[in-house]
Image (tube, rainbow, N blue to C red; front, top):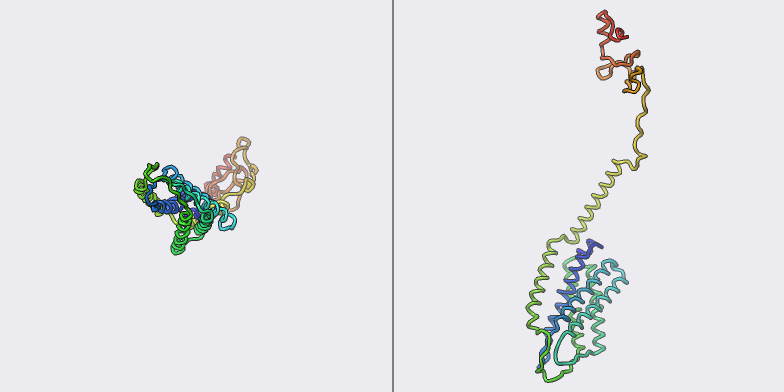
Length: 306
């Protein structure tokens, strides 16, 4: 549930594992092992396997629904109370379905007052369990929640068993249907151990709540940095693009090159990087070329061309 809290609404997988851990390997296994310890002198007790498995499914489904409600509703009173009542009724239904799965030569009935008390205990215990799933963080709070839940669920079970009234039928020699407790015990132990080991491996190999929160904060910082960089480097719209430079008028070009490249305008003193522009032709000459031509006495190439 700490993983489900950390990932938020996209937590179906973790909620399913929590339902199996709490409703399956927790509440239902405790109930069924206690059922195996129930006996009546001179009577053979067998179990209807489909009803027994149905009781396990009921426990996990209702616990999963309660966990989903409190995960989305938080610690508000109404969602917590709704989830507690729903889960408590589901746990009570799981318990009495499992008791109904017992097959023996007897008629079963229940004391109404004790029956109601067991349902109330189931609702209170479920509400406490759901509150703990939202609140526990440290190992000592987890240990405290474990003790409270163990006492509450065990108390609910034995109050319900104390409410049971058994009226024997026949002499106990007739055969009963279902499977015996000895036939269920070994598969139950192996199945619970396998599921528990798988759950432990999944939890051990996945990041914890604090690690998930650190990852979420790091991703948020990366997203903010990327957003700030994008808004600073790219214009917001086409209107933010810089305007193109204004076209320069033709300066001294001949008619045949009127649409060619524009000659650079005179910019002052000539240099290696700034050639002199002849005002008559608009052509650039290399620095010192006119002076060298003048010293030769033959005039410049510009003058001869002209």
